[in-house]
Each structure stands twice: as structure tokens, then as C-alpha cells.
Length: 408
Image (cartoon, rainbow, N blue to C red; front, side, top):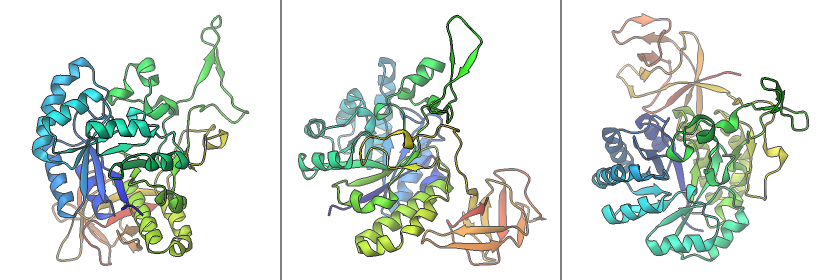
């Protein structure tokens, strides 16, 4: 079996650190330009440098997205950006555009190039094409089955790597190449500004009856006609790990630290358990199923892996997430009193029962004994998000442990 990488997204320096601590082998991030998640917080030059250093200290790789489809006006800025990345030394660049790929090979040939799913990589000849040009890895199109991926593996050089999404939101458009957002609101998905119109509620207007909105129904179940369930392959690691894939990719470069920690930890354990013993993996299946549902999701599907999706992979009656936990913050430091110092993400109060989520898989219930503000004053709760707090939970807590509250 090939060495398997767990590749986890990070929207910010905080989330990168959580991804690293909670089990990622590699993290992919975006800078402030030329990536396909313009609405994500993304990384400044300084944060990127710190994040790469932190990851490398922990033996984790960092890949930077430069995966827009560039227009002429983008090209001078792309060259400058690649010069910056050359200094920062990430482990790879994720690229979709052949022009940007050409610049990357010229400006920073020492950095690996990985070909984004946006490049519509659906067959082994495409992989061979990119390999001959110097690409180390190609990300499969989301529309491929496991059988097709196995065929690609059998027909490409052994040292070429395959990366495949195994978890997260699905795009309605082929390989994510969507024009809906640009057409409807002038924000181009292929330039990083997608407004996710696939999640909107649609009606029909008849040409001669302006202002009369008629609902769109599919079998009378609702109107969210483009709204896919989320991909989840944690129950199928046996098939995935034996398919010839090198890197298992988690979608979610706009997700919270709670989401990233939950998914990274669950897939880390599922991968490690299967590699240790398929029997152990099967025995722990209920744990993976329970844990993976502890972050926001839209119900789950296996996408295209076992054939083309049907009506059961869509959600027709709403576009909301299932949310079982709320993120409160993580232990940025633990002082000599055993108090966790956090930046509060959501309000909580003294006397509440919360959970400490640990990288090793444990979830420990704790009652909030006391909360102190930045001046050391005891408070019942903090009224504002992003407040710096010290929290006494009455139990041992370690740096990077994550705090969450059950909404059940």
C-alpha cells in the first residue's frame, strides 16, 4: 500500500495550528490573492511564514493555493506573488491555470506543483500530460469513481501522486467550474468570489406574468434543486486506502477550527486504525460515525465514488446545516494555575457544562468553574466575541485542546 497523506484545509493561522495538532499530514492554505476562496480569512505574508514554520516544526507539509483561472490583468500580480512564495518555501503550489503553472516552473521550480481539481482531471492521459510538464501530483475531478481512479493509478508513473477529495461540500458544477455566481451577481467563482447560488431557493417566472413567482418542485419535496449533500467517505476507508490514492483531501477552507479539528481527528484515527488492522477499523466504525457528525454538515453522501449520484444525494427541502456543537475557543496557553487562556468565539457562562476535545480522540466533560477577563476580574460570562479570557475548568487541560458546547 502507498503511503497515505491526510490533507486538511486551514482558513487562518489559528486553524492551521489546530489542523496540525489534530492529525493532518499536510495542510492547504490560501494567500490574500489568486486563490479560489476570496471570502476566507486567508493568510497574510507574515501569517503564512509563521504557519509554514509551525507546520514544518511538527513534520507537516503546507500547500498554497494559486488556483484561480487567470485573466490577462492577473498575470503581473501572479509573477510577484510567486516570487513571494519562493521566499516562503511552502512544500507545493496548487495550480489550475496552465499560464500560472508555466510561471511557477520558471520562477520557483524547486517548489512542487500540484494540479487543482479545477483543471478537470478525468483521465490518465491528462495525468501523463501534467507529469511530462513537471507536475508532481494531480487532484482528481470530483466526478470520478473509485474504479476510474484505480485505472488512472495503473496507467501513470509510479512516482506520480493522486490526490482526491474524501470529505466536505460538493459543488453542483463540473469540477467546480461554475458560472452561476458570475452570471447572477457578477462574482466569479473561478476568480475566488463564489456566492454559492447552488444553495439558493429558486422559483419560476413566466415571461408574460412578471412578478408572479411559482415555486420549483421536484417530486413535491421542495425547491433547493441544486443543493447536494456533503461528501463523507469515513465509512469506506477500506476501499479508499486500497485504490492507489496518495492524498486524502478534506474540503473546507472557509470552515471553523471546530470543523477542522473534528474531521481531521476522525479521519486520522480511521486511517491509522485501518492500517493497523482492518478488524480494528470495522470495530470502531460507530465511533467514526458519531464523531464526524459533531461538526456542521448537510447530511452525507458518497458522491461519485460508487457511480453517478441520484436524487437521494440531494437535499430538496432546505439549505441549512446540521449543527450539534458550538465552538467556544481553544487553549492558546495554559498557565501555572491550570487555567486555559482562550479567545472566546461564542458566549458561555460559569456553571455551564462544556466539552474539552483532545487530539487523541478523548472528549472530556467539564463544568466551567470560573472565567476571568484580561484584567483578572472574575466574570459570569463575557459579552463579546474575541474577548481574551482565562477559564478554570477544574480538570487538566493542555495547550491546543479545543472547547465546545453540545447543542443537543
